[in-house]
Every structure is written in C-alpha cells, then in structure tokens.
Length: 269
Length: 274
Picture 1 (tube, rainbow over the protein chains, first blue to last red):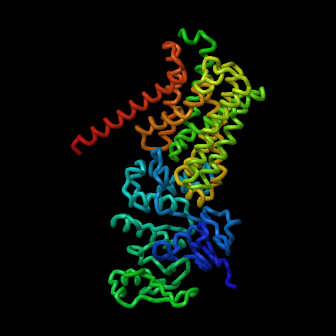
Picture 2: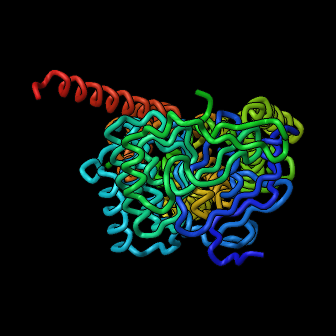
C-alpha cells in the first residue's frame, strides 16, 4: 500500500446515492500534493458529487472519503481546505461588502482576535484576484465574473493547502477568466494542490497536470491531460495556444465497469 | 418631561428600548437568509407557550420561552432536512401554535383581555420584575447576535461554505433559532406576538436601503429599532393609541422614508453627468 503522507484528497470505492439512484459508484480517486486536477464530464456524470463527497457536503454511503490522509469523520483541519462554490446562493437579503464576504474565509483559522494577520490575508487575496479597488462595494453590484473572483478570494484568504473549485469559469467574462487564471497560477507556484470541476478547461488548460473524466457515475479516464506533457507549465501553455492537438483523435478509454462503453474526455464534439 | 413622571411609562420606555435593540439584532440574520417570516411563525408557536403558563398556573413568559424554543428547533430541523416539502409542515406548526394557544387559554378559563394583551402587547402593564426578566434575556440575545456576528454572518450568507470552513453549522443554526425564540418572548410584552416579526424585519429592511455592508446595516438597524420603539411608545402616550401598533406603524414609516431616500439618490446619480 502506498504511503498516505502525500495524499491530499482520496475517495476509496466511494458511492453516493441520491433518492436510491447512485450518483457515483465505486469511485477511486487519489490526489497527491501539488497536483492540479481537472474533473471533467457531462452534466449528471457525477463530477460535482465527487467534490461534494470529498468535502463532506454529502455523505458517502459506501467506501471512504479522506482529506490529508484522515477519514472525513475524524478530519478537523478545515483551515487547510479552501472551497469555491459555483455560485453564491440565492443572494442575501442584507447587503454585504466584498471585504465582509472575503473575511469569512478567515473563520477557518479559528483565531477570533488576529486582526492584523486577517487584514493582511484579506488584502492579499483581493489583490490576487484583482479586486482590491472594489473592497468596500456591495457584492451585489459586481458582475457575475467579479462575484466568482470574490468567492475565490474568500477561499484564498484562509491560506489553504488544497483549493477545490466548482465550475470556476462558467458565465465568467474573458477579463475575469484571465485574472482568475493568473491568481490560480500564482498559488500553484507556491505548491498548492487544486481540484477543479469544469465543463471545458478553457484558459485554465495550461495549469492542469492531470484530468479525471467522469461518465455515468464512474471514473472513465484518469491521466495526463491530452496533448500536454505534465509538469511543464510553460510548454503546456505554448501547446495550448497552438491548440493543433485537438484535431487529433481524442483519447478513448474503455469504461472499467461497463465494457464497451467508451468515454471521450473532451466531451461530445 | 411629563411622560417621565409616570413610573409605568418609564418602565414601558425601558422595555421598548431593550426590544428595539434585540429584535433587529436577531432579525438581520433571518432577513439575510430570506426567512423574514420566521419570527412570525415562532410568535404563533409562542402563544401555545403563553397559554400553557396560564393552564399550569406558572409564569407565561418562561413557558413561552420553552415552547417557542422547542418550536424553533423543530422549524430548523424541518428547514435543514427538507428542501421544499417543509413548507406545509411549517404552516401546520404555525397555525397549530395559534389554535393550540387559544384552545388552552379557553381551558384555563383566562379572559379574552389576557389573550389580546399577548397577541398585541401590553406595554403599559410592564412590572419591575418583568423588566428584570426582559433585561436579562435581552443581554443574552445581544451577547449571541453581536458576539457571534462573524460566524452567524457566514452561515446565513453561504451555509455550504461555512460547513467546509469547519464551522459548527448545525449548532449555530439551532443557536440562532433559539435566540429568535427568546427574542420573540422578550418582545411579546411590547408589540405583541402578532407584531413581533415586524420589529425584527422592518428596521433591517429600512437600514439596508441606505447601507452597503452587513456590519453597517446591523448598526443602523439597531439604531432605527431603538428610535422607533422608544419613539412609538412615547408617541402612543400622547396620541392615546396602542403602543405596539404605534411602534410598528412608525417603523414602516421609517422604511418608506429610507426607501424614498435611496430611490432619490439613485435617480440623482443616474441624471448627474459622469
């Protein structure tokens, strides 16, 4: 058995059932320190369930979910985790400034009176996503892409070792996407581990070191992103720009639990 | 001032002040979560608690606190465990609370005057002991809502994020509803169970017309809460009107004013050349 020392996120034979319908079944995923993993797949393939179960937002009813090598039931070091949900809920009935929302990210640190460190972390996080000049504005007056960046800043403010993002680029304007990729690249250089759910990798493609494709509740592909050599950020960025590789036949993996079912990691063309 | 020559009026004004502070302090979290009517529901349930006090011949305030807190906990469990079907369950709980209260009051042979005083408040009959109870409970409510404001803000703003941040979300949710239940019983003396929710919601709604952030809204809502409660109670003395209703009508008037100010400011911004 491999050492769990470097294991950051793990699902072991995990099954999650919603109303008797398994959303994921027998999923094995192990993400190690420093990896930047894109979780791909069509709607309903189970990719969001993978991250929700690995964060304990839904319970696995069979198998096990671990964070930093500890089973979720016994895991308490939430300051090591930063979570970026897809959207801010239904919207709040009371206004909140950008700073107030980002400040929630410091609650993971559990020190209530740590004003100076808090203010510094909040300012740095806002700077990283390019919203320092909007700090005192109400979140509701920001565009969708800017709001997404606020949520990323909130996660970064907690100075996490693992960042989990659910569809960070959906509905985000081009300028915000660039700002977002830059902010994430910055954190990757410091050795952060990242797991992100996405429909398409878009501007984030050069950052990805590994892709996992979900299909019908199972892992259909798990390996290097197609067309890139893992571990070479610059090289991958160039390859991404040329993007000739997409014309090649996409990698086809046979489904381990359903022989004959094939999955295309780029989705249906 | 003439009004301060009467002991009962001084006690009434102090009670109004305490309620003006506490009701919006809890209400802001309910409004933030878009559950503005929660206070109303808990107020309905509290009536059964009041009636139970008469029925068992003990202090209605304490039985109201207990029943309202239990009701609040059930409401929270329904809210957190169901998505949409909880709606009907909540309705039953709320109507059951009013009906159960009226029924029990009948069995306990209490007069209708008593029932009315709890439904619409009886500020002027506040006794010195009442004030001690209201004061103690109000301090507890303020300790939770102001002391825990960062955590309560986080769970009401984005509950899932708060979970991943490692906050004790379930405990905080229960703490919030129990605090709301205590506030309802504190405020029932002043504005009555049927109007309690107004004092939780309206000052917050009025404040948020003018503010940009949560903490600013909290501060302004408490200020408005105190002004309308004390102002309404004082005004009712001179106008010879019901204090509870006067307070709530004053609060709504303030909301209309801040709403108009906000709309005016927006129009000015739109028409001013950049």
